[in-house]
Length: 328
Image 1: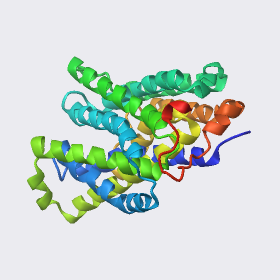
Image 2 (image 1 turned 135 degrees about the horizontal axis):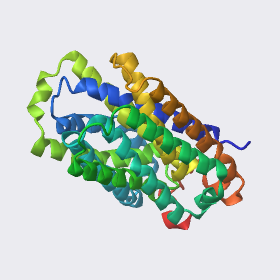
Image 3 (image 1 turned 60 degrees about the vertical axis):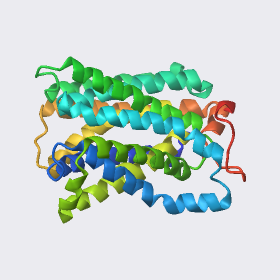
């Protein structure tokens, strides 16, 4: 078996963190009620500041040139616009429905990856990848239905918002794979985080209540910092490592496991009972089985010499610009 261990560990770590972070964010809403703009406006800048030392060292080495800065604009734009829809979604659609519809991002990510990356098209003929996708989608649908995602009136405007969010988040991962090829994940996300954080601060000033930051309790600040460090900074670096080593198709598809992990963590941390009982656990088991098949599909990528070379961890050239994203 030819499994990329670093990439596999990175995607596992990323999904575990992103599956746990919503629980902490839910806890944070008690300290910043009805104000996702302020929550984003302080969390992203904290993550961006944490990456300043790495960017400074890259700049001193000459690895932070104008081409790196310009190439990061596209992923940052997708992430920022997706973040706007993500913040608006809870006001139009219930949370468990959000968890289901946001995973439509997988469709866009896989479709775009197949178009842009010839090395990933081999997965179209992979039974393991196909079975993994089917099991994951079936598990996600089962988990959502058993949790009552469609038991209430589903707002059409809310569905449109969360589906648009999925489009931009799905293309975000693909754009990272395309534009940031050949650049260290630490530097890549470091630059993207600066752009996105600037945008979230502007949104906070226009739509949020930044004055509420001063009234945060110590535990509120702990939640802000923990979600910034884990949910934004560390998780995105793992995400970038996985994208550049495993490709956009497997990495994005594997994200479907996160709602099941969120349900488990919510039950353990917040004491929330997992709705659906044994049906939810059965659906979650399908999700896990699908995720394992998706990871197993790496064998099909590794069978292609060009693909195997493309998923090795990229290194910057001495000029810090890397190769052209279109050069493959």
